[in-house]
Image (tube, rainbow, N blue to C red; front, side):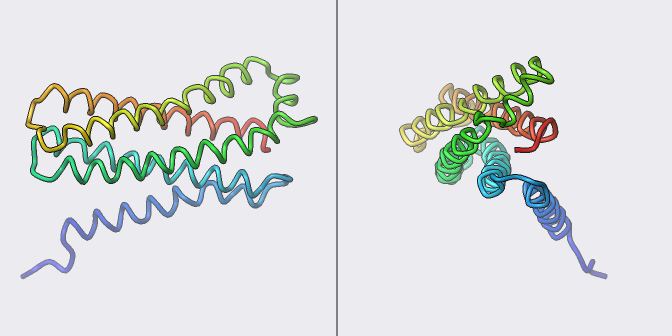
Length: 187
């Protein structure tokens, strides 16, 4: 007897539910009190969607490393889309940063109550969150240049995989510190 659902159906359902719940996290900011809800929600959604796409980029790296035909082209397309979203998220984060540094803003609140948290969480987060853009662009440019000549085990493929892994790690650190920062003081 044939099963009603196959493994792919379960995987797609699981990924869809996880993505829906993951994307709802920034929307909780709508409930809180803030004069900068729009900026915070847009930045949070941008960061969340970007991290989800970066996970897809990381998973698409494996077929490229194995030398699968057409994998580099598909990876490059998703990587450029993710780079565009990283840029948009950085722009939205800078828009939100204006309110963060404003008079009686969260920066003053953190500096008064916990200067270590501000220095570690916020300053570190700001620097590490900017790294994905040059890392992603470097990986995409290398992919564009060498995509038709990539073979399994090629040194260029390894460099691209390293850049994409660092790209993904920096985004996760930025997202985790951003979540932590919003828990310290909502903007």
